[in-house]
Length: 441
Image (cartoon, rainbow, N blue to C red):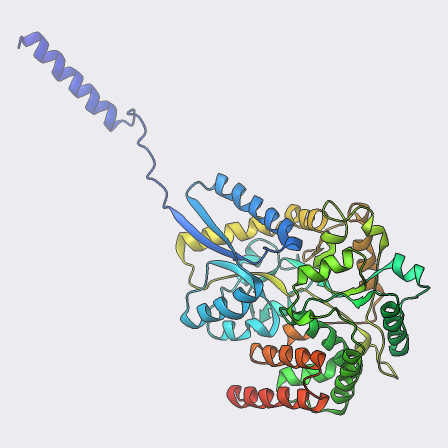
């Protein structure tokens, strides 16, 4: 190698080293981000829930596009299987999904005590969301918030206004009018109440209205707090009246084995005059999925008064903010950060507006609603809520998990005529005493 070439190479090497030391070299690539996978189990699999599924799925896809290192496994499962089987088992073993559908109230209390749910109070404070929700009471234990409601609901009686007009019927407001309405609908070959009780909570929904009408909120509050009893005079009168109601045969044949979808179609096909169910059914009665013009035939009313003299609390409309999303307390580090960022994306005013306008759900967050865009049945439910003297949380959300199954069984057996009122109450009382003994209440 010539001296000139050798010198040139040394000069180039020195320049390169000088450039590197002075920061003039090309910028080094950022280290790759940690790959994060989150599991998210939902229950939006039935027809009336598909729009909710789509809304949340859209949020997830947008979130993944903005966070390319995060993937969300969005798994749907039937509500009963998720709620009564999988989640309970996972909470025992301490291995729930990262995000999951959750029902607030007494159902989550044991999960909170076991340390299975992530406290979201800090999340709310950091994002200025402490006052963004209508009601977090069913999600709050001590100083913590262990889940967030994604929607509100009410449980009115829907009725077919055309059928009622053709038969000269008016909305029943008391027991005798209810009996008369049931008789006239049956005489016309129309099922009085559409119901599919395969999952048993629809029948229990009817039963809790009877219990509330006679006993008000005080009786169930005392049971939950550890000082109540099902063997009260008010509950016995309510249950005897419910058994009498069942003997009127107000439901379709074989309702115990019928699906909720069967009941929905029975009502929408004009074969049933009334349908007691939640406001989550609204998107089937109005909008793209409804029968042509069906929404104009649908009215709503509160379940009739049954006991005299009536108390304001006993005449309440079943409603609340019991359904939402919870997070696993196992989340840590970057996975916890990603899960909370996804939660923030879901709980935004824009998403709440989509829930209102596209899925016809009552918002859980405080947003302005343009009722001209919600459809005629939606506004009727809002008006009914505003006119109600009181509201009450449905019994299956109020009762501790250990007592939900006995309550469902009692309602089912009363409808079938398999037990007397006293036997039904004694069966629930037995489970209640065992629960008190186990929990020390």
